[in-house]
Length: 515
Image (cartoon, rainbow, N blue to C red; front, side, top):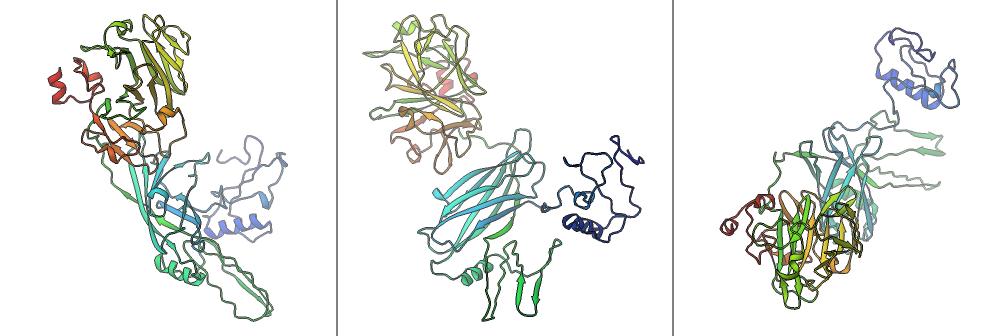
């Protein structure tokens, strides 16, 4: 406590300083702590004793090696810039025509940003033209660096622009975005180091040799026989050392080039971007399906997706199932042995689960799980509806993604339809974490739901395309030539839903006429 000469543990406390502490006092105490040699300093500099495992006695006096000036918890840590900056290092322009790695570090970021930041890069040097990474915080609160790899093999020599966008997105914080653009030099294969340095300096900034941040530039010459030269280059600085002496041994070491880029914050709209065609249930229709392809890929983005019997008027389920026989789809007969609400699939903290809510039961890999007893889905699981009569509807789990699950029919309706069950307003991130998939789902497009609608995600470039009736699907990856987007999950039927607001976000003119 203030005014006490000892703490509760019996350790002596330093006296209050009689005069304000200056920067000279702090630097003198810091150098004394580093070297262990006494330095003449004013007694007004306070010291804070630190207790180590080798010295635990209450009357142990702190030594010079265990003292530090007040306010210097990390004397060796470089102070961050007051403004946001992106520190770029690791690039060596001498490795022309080879593999390169950029190390990117954040400095001076404000506290009011999300705990995880998205880094988007665009350049001709980066594979597929774009890359997406994540900045995350370490346990100490610092931002972990991000590494971006590229190859300049086969690239024309010259300057290449890299555009960077840093996104801060969090549900409880305001959306913020920082941008910057920097230039990477790809020299000729026969370029000398002097030419590379000259071009690099012309593209970045003029460099002067100076001592800052308490650093010391030193050149020692002992009678002209030997020289001890310590040269440090920071922030795009390149030190040119010319030794014209014909005799003696010269060791030269050139480090990789590093510099800082200022991050410019740009204004973002207060509200999230709206999807051009919002919907929570839709369908991808294939007019001419090839061998093994489904005619309809039905899309659902619901917290709980209910599977049940096909009904034309006010069905109770979201996913409407019918029995397929030798003559095709039969909405009567065995279809009537399905309950209006037969099973529910929902997302959990560790994946997805299915629950039997029917009168007739379900079989999971041939075993009835019991009514109202959720069971976790796994890849390849066989789902039969119902348990009393086999073969009415048989599904299999063909893919379990971080943000959804894909189901295929393995009965006589296998060529008719398959199902995407996506978590609403959920982005899986890019690049996506690897997930398990069956061969029949490996060739399907990667879809997601956010901003009220469905999106296509290109797995190579990370480009997102909003799905709408006017979208040209032939330009998207893993999309068949004859596919089109329909705003209803069952466009081949006139289904009347008087409570359609639970399934659809908007009601168009076609929906109103149907109702």
